[in-house]
Length: 353
Image 1 (tube, rainbow, N blue to C red):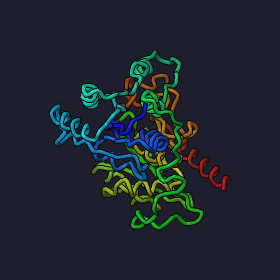
Image 2: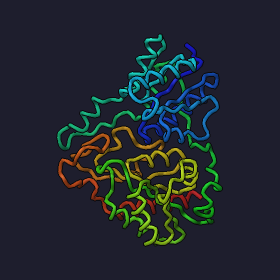
Image 3: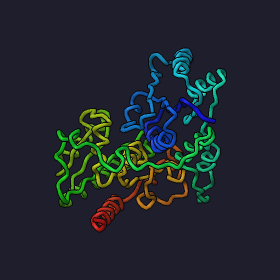
Image 4: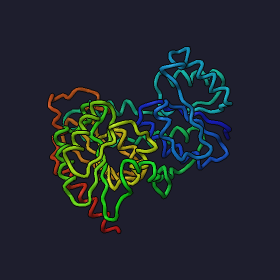
């Protein structure tokens, strides 16, 4: 069966929307005669840079005119007017369930993601020291939805910028272009939930150690007033450190800068996925969550995952549950472990030329 226009739904969260991009761009390129309409929220819509020509991004204003069931029904009618003839629900939450029900009423074919909720619950509820069985990645689960609609393709995605990098001119007010021999490190120390945040005093120690290295420049990523204040202090305390949290620079600038990094240090958070979208290796720090749940960044190596082998992990899929031990022992990782992994990557990069 062939389709003229396919609606793709993934409204939030930012990191999960970012994870759709390698799959969505791949299917778009494999089927250039089909138009794909990506429905997401405004902030996430800015991630779809250098998109294939047959991808159209539509914003769902779920806090404004598309709020509530009445607003969602209006949204469904607006989408129907685009001549949608198939729906790929990559989210499977109340809002998308309502929307896809409307499309089914109208006789339009719908495919829905299998999030593996049961397997994920079993993973976090298993007895202490139980064996960890890696689950299918979100990328595979997204691909399954398109496969069920009849789209056969091999995911092929390297970077938002293809084989190149983002425009240096976008961030020229923050820093000059990378000098020969200079090593750029990104640090994104925050996450939405406490169970995914490496202790800030430990991360400051990491920044202090790395900033003392020769020809190293560190860029700090964050948002919000509290994060801005913390990162501003680190910028003042340590040499060769620049914070991007001082104001909202926008994804176009931040992703362009990220693409020129040599490595990103991140939590299990959106910034891990953003760096992955621009083909930057990520040293990712995991606490309450675990990469076996299927959320490791696109083409990221498990060798760069930093975590402790505690039997209570993962205690949560998203890091939003309180620590059972009350002490977040999973995050008591020595800063030297992270620093050494970054140095190893630096040596590897130098040996690769």
